[in-house]
Image (cartoon, rainbow, N blue to C red; front, side, top):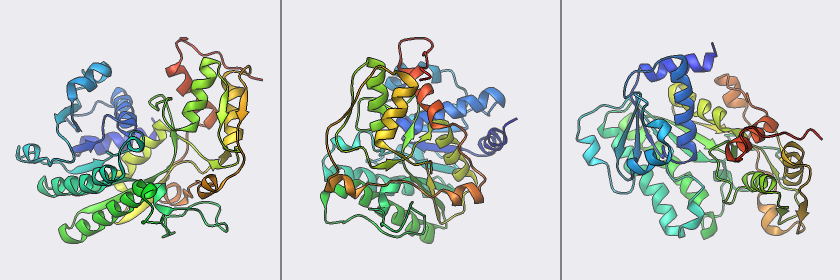
Length: 347
């Protein structure tokens, strides 16, 4: 049996896990992975509780989770406190804060986004203290590092750079950095074990194809037979981790990441945006065109290379990338395609 599955099952059966953001991309990745684990090793009832503003709507959209005995939903909002839940008297040993992801954030005003991340994190930290949790995992972002220096190939956890805090367009990254600091303050005052996951870019069946993620847009266009449009020159470098690996890494960090430490979560296998488009074309549809509409510009240069160094999590916690990018593209496309089995074009 997969060692990660066995270890995670033991963790879930010996703890009580509370997850925020359980209905977003990160949350659905976690729930699907835990559901898969439950098929191998039966988990105890109500071992995972998910906070959501509207449980009924989520279950209507994703009915496959409605019969999972290990899963419990509770209604609430990270911005309005969780006294009704903490007053129930239930103890949660672990809290995984995955709310305020980058999917819907760009649609919010800067101050609103800041409050969602910073105030939301503080409310969940207060909740963790009230329910006597011993460990807290924050899903932060690789964006906290700011621009990658020219003499570095990837971001290491020890790099302390950050974006310009006076630029409102950096709200997400600066707020995530402040949320990390809040975790450090609560660890100091309340003896709470905190771990930070600095998350980069991901791919998987639950990734929306109609938002601002290049890889999702490319897959959508390939499936629809539309041109894959690249607004710049295609030179920025990115990397993508499959959602099952994301879930495994987060659950492992929740279980046994070192307290007071941050870990990069993502792939270190760099690929340019142009080469990514070519790979999607090769994998899904050789007939679509790639339309490079621009040249390198200052805005693109700010994030010309967004790649994590993952030696810390791979060496210290023995995590690994188990799904290659080509296979991840296939699996993502299969979910979104109306064809029951996607015909993969080999050349």
